[in-house]
Length: 182
Length: 423
Image (cartoon, rainbow over all chains, first blue to last red; front, side):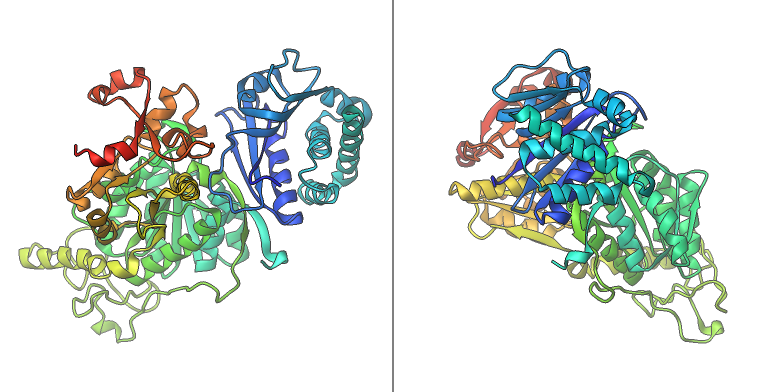
């Protein structure tokens, strides 16, 4: 594992990007026993506006807490994608919601475009789990944490009444990512 | 690490946990970003351990409430950010004068005024020292890691109780909102100090008895009657106009900190032994500095780090000693240059001083500066492969006018070459 693995989850305020970041950091730090730091940036709005969460994962102690060269980034909205895609490093990956992000940024990284939010709506009836589907996809695409770790982290963070829903969302994420990867 | 105890906590949550660990049983505050999670967490946790949580009508009432609660014997705390910290200043002065132990947390955000609520800064460090009027003792700690926020909050309570004085915990939005895995300490793992209470008869008790350096503090309601005021007072707590007593009283409250600086100071020193370039950094800026210093070491450069965990009283001894043997001290801060003045004062011209001026850098580079605070804009070699020898620096000619400086571009300034030149 390289010394620092940097991830960024971005979207609109209220889409659960910060929660996605927390879950990823927990999967890495608590269940996969690595070092992880999660930080975030958001505007004064409660909903809307570009919002992002960053997770640094490393086998070493982490001093600098913010991302500088992104290995993997998720963008659920066009605004967030445009605002935050600049730091993706060469050979990094970008996963976007294909229905929202029409203007794909160019660069020396691999872009996966996938209708994440509509899958959440059509297959699970709830757009609110789009962030969990995305987490599943990112996990499968990057392999930075194990499936077991991310599942444990998701289930530990979501309300008890929605365990099944989130479990399904995560599984869908894994499967869809496997499909787009080929 | 014991697996079961490892948790991913936010800096603010760790602060709340530290307060509970230290025995805090009273919190009064008025929510303000980026400190609100401390109040949220304590509003849930305090009632469960028999403590009280009160959301007050404003920050002035909050500091008054914790001062009152402390006088009834409870360890008490409030938390706020810049605008609220300004409002609390009067009450902080009262607590200094009346020698009431309490802890004030300031999660620093951009200022002045309501400024930049969701962005970090370190621009209240001088306010922590001089915010309230009059000569008064100040103790302030500055953690940089989530685990450290917990332990430094415990230490803040200890110092407050030990020296009967308000103690400030200063950190910024970055570490306040950041989550890191931490280990919650077991009971007994960290030292917890409780205040000394009187054992004499009520008639013989004086809350400001000058036969002690730090007089025992009775709790209201336990049988000791005493007076507390913000006016200069005699040993029984009642006001006095006697110039001699006023002088003695003021000297005593300053001396109780001054005489125990060695106990209160705490520094992290990294690679200082034969370093010629040293970074003096605190709080989240020190995280970047630490990274840069390690990188410098990897590329064979002798760069060290002095990281004070106690900002006030200022670590003058460490800086004095350092200035005698290094060529340059770099003081990056998320402000326009505050602690550098103090560093300069104690370096007494013995070495050169650099201030990369990070807050302006962020604005100047046209990015949100809260992405950049640390070394990325201070050290162009910090994270990347180029060696750490350069500091991004504003052109010297442009330093005169801030307005002009904001418009100007930054240039790469070579620290090594500057070492040989005297200013």
